[in-house]
Image 1 (cartoon, rainbow, N blue to C red):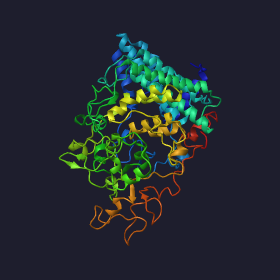
Image 2: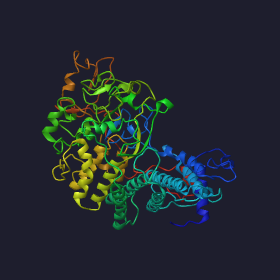
Image 3: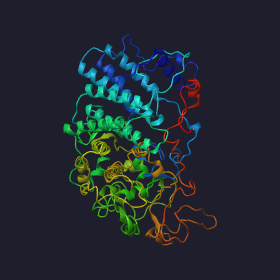
Image 4: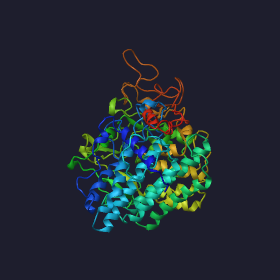
Length: 609
């Protein structure tokens, strides 16, 4: 681990503590992580109670319309959109939006723990477990900082407060990620093994799974940003270094796979098993779920996802881009006349007899259960509604919908769909992608993806058969293997909050976001338009192109009046030229000007800001 002089440590922590508050007496207060006892962290139970606070770092479900959280975090990507645009992904983020680096406050608390845990006397196995958890959380915090800001400063001890010294540069992101991976190696060596997630605590396989995630992220970030020659890869990074990250990702995932402790959840019901996974309120014995957050409305712990999407609305919608990426039920790309013919009758393209059954378990299909007492998805989507009753694209999201629970679909904070932090499916996908990036044996990749295909009742991977070379397919120039792995990842993780990270680490915003608007289902040229009459489903209440006196346009379509084929185009009015995502700026967040001033220019602003 890189050695730092004391002055460097002092300056960093002073900067970061200053950023979290503007109150003058901040440094006069006792740190929040200080214990009241003269001999803090004296028992394994005290260690446990201390590290418990860091479990709030794992993802949660959103509690409001347009909010953040697992079910809504794909919004603004090419997977899902709200009626409002995502300021960062549309290129509208401003320097004034820069936030403080609050993660360093958590890191200081973790460093405090790691400096004092040796005070504990008792069961060494338990002590090791909580030390392993602390090392894991420090790694996770630093990874999140690197994802947001790139180069940051690695601090691995509690530092005294000294406002006189505030001049320190950032460390290269590779140094920080290398330190993160070392923290995870220590965590893996200390944490217990587990064959289920009943404890809802971190265990050895979770740490290995996160190691595979982080090493894969950094390997692809460096490889693809270097290929684009943008400002975001580490200068002078070598191919050997990049391959080293992929090797670590592969080996970490392989260790979990070879343990035999985990498997993809399947009961032999390909039209149900995938969707059931995300609404099973107790996953303690589920062999796929390695770490999760339990909701219990009896203890006033719930979220509101099911309420917002139980009308097929939620002020959100899946995108045409996502829907198009699911293969046909025969394992071929969904393109050409087959695609257009299926689109002409609403929801035909979503049917499991036509497409990968994971699509009909992610999107709402007419006739599916939507609420208890036989309330079914209506024949057409609520594109004519307002507020959270409105669907933005014509493709409702039904993943996470607790359709069999009245309270969840009716009331706020009554949803109990679990918050899954790590599932075995990701381990398989991380392994497959790492092997693909290393140019490894294609049979190993196909074997890793087989359980996911089996659960959905899909044919096994055939890289040549499913290679999409359509002129408008963004990844048409990738190799068949890399393309297939990326598609499988998108389909398996749709609406779970992975997509923005994937776009960023693949340096793919130029292909997927820039100058683009995300479209919805076919309107003109389909039976949706036929329903916009006084006797149709929409009662003539949809106005596009022009509106009668006293009314406003409430639906935007692609193309121009008179075109035979026009898709729902929700952001046509607010993004007339498409997303203005700046590929020389927006892959990283801006730093507060105040921080640059405090370091007297040692911390320089991120590129483009």
